[in-house]
Amino acid sequence: MTNIAPPSPYRKFSRQEWAKLRDDTPLTLTAEELNELRGLNDRVDLDEVVAIYLPLSRLLNLYVAATQKLFDATKKFSHIKDQKVPYIIGMAGSVAVGKSTTARILKTLLARWPNHPKVGLVPTDGFLLPNAQLEREGIMGRKGFPESYNLPALLEFLSAIKAGKTEVKAPVYSHLSYDVISGKSITISQPDILIVEGLTVLQTGSLPRDGKAIPYVSDYFDFSIYIDADEEILRKWYIDRFFSLRDSAFQDERSYFHRYASLDDVETRETANRIWETINLVNLRENVLPTRHRADLIIRKEADHRISSVALRKL
Image (cartoon, rainbow, N blue to C red; front, top):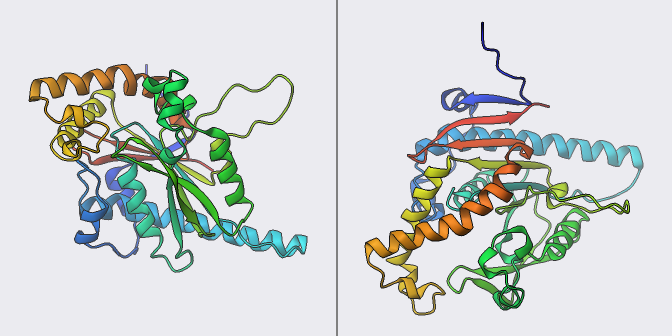
């Protein structure tokens, strides 16, 4: 009997098939710029940019242009002189999968298309509850889980962006102090595109019984991306990154994790693996991975960090 693959809402492209979709999109990123955008332990070279990110930037450019035309048509129909609002791209995936690097590369490439030169980027880390509050509520060990975020503030931020507000402030997070920086913010001023990057941005919740509307973060997205990799690959990347941080950022006495700076290799591996097992893996299985198929595009990474396939949701 012939095995027939079940129907899928996605069209899957191999790396080679996806690379051909670059068409004539020019490479507007230099090796020096890529080096500055690359995160710790992320292995992304210009070949990866050409094969994966240029076709993706072309696709998103087409989507944004189509949305801009739809805005013009709606404006003409309604006779209302509204300003166009930012096109929001959501990006989700596990800890250590390379979300931040992907977001920064896309931001840079998209800003070099002529019809949307202003591109913003907001990590949702800034919307985490302050450590003091997490400690009071007894959920410090669940930092990064949905309940550790100031969801009303994040929803208010996205609502203001989509309402076309001229300037919207977002809180800032310090990976050195492992906490939200009190009193510090970044200002988002009507970008053409805004990338919102975070662990659980595609998550939904239980619907209320009283019929009242509950918005989800993803309700504000025009397009969403999930970066995917096997659990054991993610574990290795997390441990590798922990070793790199032990020898760099953790050495700073101001670092929240300075206590790990003096660990030997065996202790470092055991500590990193314990944190992965008890926190990050649990969050991945419970809250991150289940949202994968809510994304419009799924990027699949392999152990060498190269992207092997791309799945695009059918329209």
